[in-house]
Image (cartoon, rainbow, N blue to C red; front, top):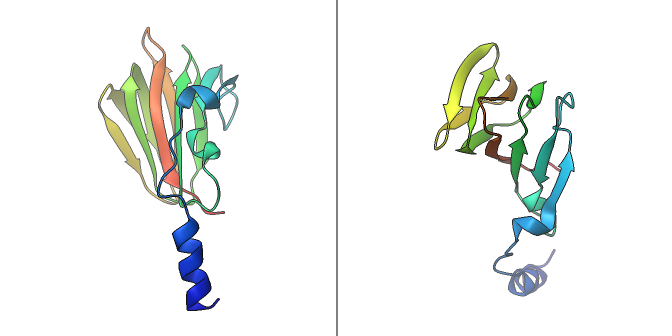
Length: 129
């Protein structure tokens, strides 16, 4: 690619994308085991490619979980509301509103809703595609 073409592509790229999460909402079983039900907000799916990261919100209904699964990248779970139990390579911790778990590449991770209220969390990780 020539320098001129690269500059032209950069100049035509949008400086940002604004996404209303309500436009991305859908009811579905959580990933990695379909344990219970959840509301998914696949926010970064509304952002045109190429993009370097995935940014999602998920609300796990009572008793629901994102099942344990290996990750090939670092991943972040940030709790917006409710309570959950996160696991990484067998180590478990309770997360509440305002708490974040930073999970490392190569670990087997998951998170389960606990308590009376649904668990609302942000999940962020690099886009490797």
